[in-house]
Image (cartoon, rainbow, N blue to C red; front, side):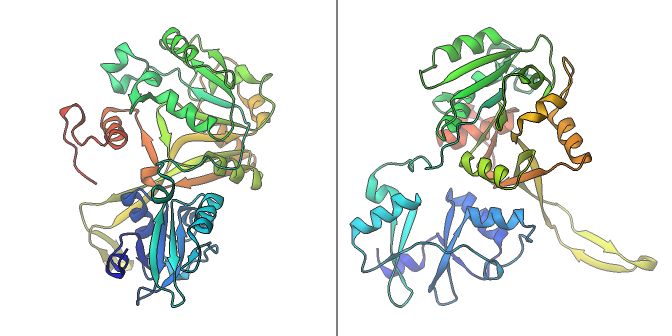
Amino acid sequence: MSSKIILEHELFISEKQTLLFALKLMDKLGKKLLIVVDQNAKYLTLLSIGDVQRAIINDVDLNSSIESTVLESKLVASDVDSIQKIKKMMVKIRCEFMPVIDSEANVVKIYFWTDLFGKLQLPVTNSRVDAPVVLMAGGQGTRLKPISNVLPKPLIPVGDKTIIESIMSQFSDIGCKHFYVSVNYKKDLIEHFLNQLVTPSINIRYVYEEKPLGTAGALAFLKDEINQTFFLSNCDILLQQDLSQLYDFHKSNNNEITLVSALKHHRLSYGTITTKEDGLLDSLNEKPELTFKINAGVYVLEPHLLKEIPNNTFYHITDLINTVKERGGRVGVFPVSEKSWFDIGEWPEYIKTVRHFNGDENFLGLELPHD
């Protein structure tokens, strides 16, 4: 790779840029790692999605510059390292690319995973989490009519799999083997489909809701069955996130509940005004962009919380979260970037999700604007 290509590479980001800019660039490129350089394009460090997540968790302003943020040290290759050593380094830390740095802090080459291994998928995390997983699959999917008149939402396809297959694969990839699937609407179709997929390494237990019980009511049926930390997930979302990191965050912080929060950026169409005493102008901000944290629909819970859920009662997970928070329990929030979270709960988001996984800009003949 020539020095000109290196200097113009899209993975480079200035230390003067903000964390928010870096997060958006990661989403745009579909990468979770960037190369931080100084004003002379000299290598300084690597910025990972984990660095940004830790900053958010520590309540660092996303408009802070990268240079002002404390980053974990990163392993990079030297121009004197052999290709065999570089390959071992990449496997050890599971990085999607490895920059090669010379003695003058120039990036002289970038090795991508596909350059050296020829596979698109990084190896499964070394961290194994044998935790139960509860999937809430009982909803009617009314916002996805008319397709949900025929197929229950968990069986709607995304890419070459159904949504529930993709969700289960994400959990089984980190070591989860025991799944509890709460069903109601078209439960026979869901059960028949999943029974064709079961392998000796996967166990599925069905929880039958005779009536809709909300996003957490069905958990009351599991009070005597789950006795360890477990995952809970809606059946209409996908995360591009190593779920073992979510589990580790929950355990290391001694949380009772941890919820995943996706960042959402929204630019106002109008300028905003703040005023002070006597109606005097304080500030004017032209079309500001606001960043919100939204509930992504994936959780980690401690088993004792099952006993706090009323029997045979319509009950939302937010009710449980508020109960824990009101009594002073620890409720953690684990952030993910906007484009690491995919929602198929309604048509516009479903089309965007399929477009992403299929690489099809005109899925179902419906043009959608680019972000």
